Every structure is written in structure tokens, then in C-alpha cells.
Image: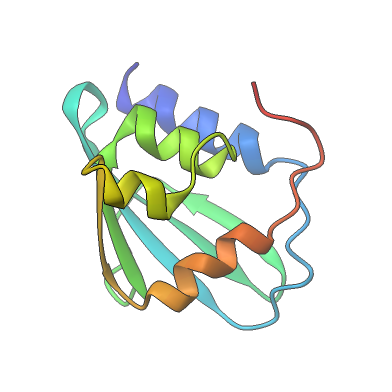
Length: 111
């Protein structure tokens, strides 16, 4: 998987998602390791999800992980706390803001 494919897949996961329950601003930067190395962010602003392929310097939190681990977390296949516990991800910043991402309702089940 390339960095470009990772961004496309992350956007696909949240294409029909519902984040209306998140009224505060949440900005999480993902630092991707391995083959798809790069940085992107997921922002929820006024209940709308934005995913962009560049750093968010005023982020609430930052997650460092492989593309596979990030997609598993975003798609609901893996829990962030498990990925951190098993050493597949590292998180810094406001963990409470990151956990708000679990409140986003995915409309379709991600493979």
C-alpha cells in the first residue's frame, strides 16, 4: 500500500460516517510508519469529518503506527488501547479527544 492509497482508504472508511454526535473540535494527526510512510490528519469540526494528507500542527493528539494498524483502528477492526498495549501504536497528546473518534458511527461495515 502506498501513502496515496492509504489516504484514499481512510477517506473511504469515513465517506458515509456520521459524526454528528461530536460537537467539539477534534484533530488527530497520524504519523504512518513503514511502506506508506507519511503524515495525515483526521479532523471533526461541527460534526463533519475531514481527512487531509498533511500535518495538522495544532492537533489535539498524535498517533504513530503502521498503515495497517491505523486502518484497522479507523475501520473498527482494532481498538486503539489494544494497539498501544501490544506496541503497534503510540499516542501522545489528549487521549480523551482520540477516544471521541470511537463515537463516529460508520454506516457500512468496513472489510
